[in-house]
Image (cartoon, rainbow, N blue to C red; front, side, top):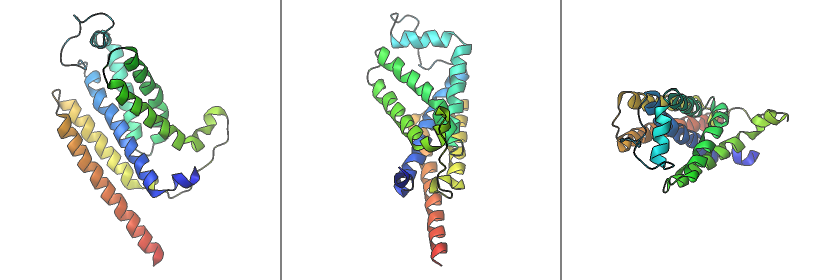
Length: 209
């Protein structure tokens, strides 16, 4: 496991998995926090037990609907910051597990595929951080090597930029364009990757000198 965790590509995949998973939750959270429906139309007249009726029922609870949104926002933010990603993975796991179970309990078409992939990604993050999460089951912590690629400050800065853009966009826009949002996030993520690789190249060159 240690060999995998020190692999350059593996660390990049983990970093951007945090961005994607966290960003998805932040994107979905603000609509709930603002007290709006997740869908564009009311599901009040839909058949009892259907997905649309279920969402309408949760929406009508008010405080609970907003509580779910705040939980998603905090979990997503923790993941995206990189610095608090371990806590984010722990907090996010029961949330995405609950979402997955809901989607397989009702007719959500292919949504369980998406939520299943998100649950799988979160599980991978927990496995990645297991050395430092062992204390949760009363096992001694095994510290990772210092100065790892994923601990560079540039990834944290990129995460905060992604979070602020996503939260700000959803806060001020009810009718959103997911293509626009994802496109801007992709550009920010690409900029963070270039900056991170540049620092790695400079560090490698400095060591050779």
